[in-house]
Length: 81
Image (tube, rainbow, N blue to C red; front, side):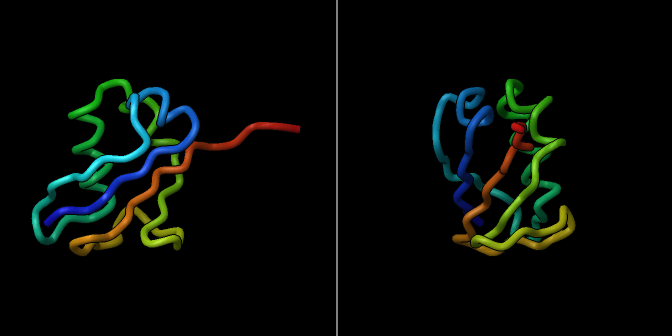
């Protein structure tokens, strides 16, 4: 199945792009998508574990199953004050 991955802030800088399609097995979870992205894009490997994840604009857990066409967004922690 194919999902659409979007990156924000430091992830966008590390990946060098805003979004990309990702091919996954039919029964893939958010955890598996994160793992595959870390393998494909080593610059993201150190950043992804600290990120929140949203699927179709709703925050989800790593065990959440994905469906074809889902929008998967990795959101890095925000700092500020």
